[in-house]
Length: 483
Image (cartoon, rainbow, N blue to C red):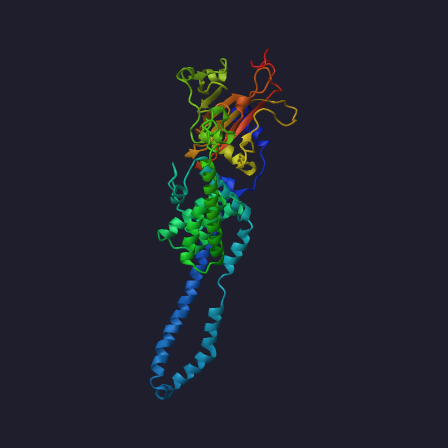
């Protein structure tokens, strides 16, 4: 029995997949956490019902005794003159109050606590929470989103709108602060302050937020703004010791800067000290090829890539492809669409069905790994997929890449090629193909590519790397380096 083409690709892909325990980048694992939380909520509601039932019994007892004691104390002798009342008083104090004590002291938390203890081993760690926060900050930078847009949930293509509280904003700011990232500390503390000013209730007070905000602004060199926030803090808490010290320090630094500026101005007015036009610094124009690679990557992720000339666009086509009259494709040729000309990137449409996609996911989930994202320092870090050289597996270098898109993505998630300005966007059921090497065996460095972070939605991809071994007769070696 012949295996379908996609199945052969999957079996090859699965060999290189590895388990990954970072909750914040794994939708599959976070889906499991949703069901874990749902189970805990059910257990919590059971506990609440048990507590409410216990409280209701105590309440009925209290109401009964309240009316009885009220009537009895109006005429104690007459009340106790009835032998039954005397007996019942002895019985209540000797037995029934003891039963009530046992009821009040009874523990209804066992079921909930035991379930919580069992599930806790699957909970995210502090590292996972920090990772999720940094991933959110990365999305903010890549797609140029202001803090208010994220906090109000107004993201493109979003289905389940979610608002961020003051506590959420404050937590993001604190994580950025711990990472000595004062830029994001300012953004999120300012957003927390804004929501507090709008009247949102929170356990986080304005004084705490202003303390972080003023210091993060100072660390970015804006002493005057830092002073303004410090003064506002002291209006709320005049005895705040750190703020009182910062106020004096900031005022001293501003005075020092003012005196230095006056000295420079005075020297420039002296004869022979005037700045000539030739010595004045002129802003330098930055050509496109000198834009830092990280910036290129982010621009492409936002859809701000290079634009082809009309002449180049006119050379891109859609066609039916039968793979040189392969019998399998003569009656049902593949739909082929050109995505880019140099390097040549082509997309195959309707190449994998929904049923096949679900089967691939089912087989891959236990071993799936996450795409690695880059750090804030360099675009050359781990978000770049190595495009040319493969490990020493005895299969030779990678000739070509075949990449399945197994989901649509509401926003973000493109595959970008910063060297040429190309961006390929996810489209469920399609696959893209490109050569990583020239026919000569030399590397085509323009195929270096990267995965953009998903802003809204989920992205499922699987890839097949085609290596040199076994391809000698399918793609003969070229005669020149660029061939």
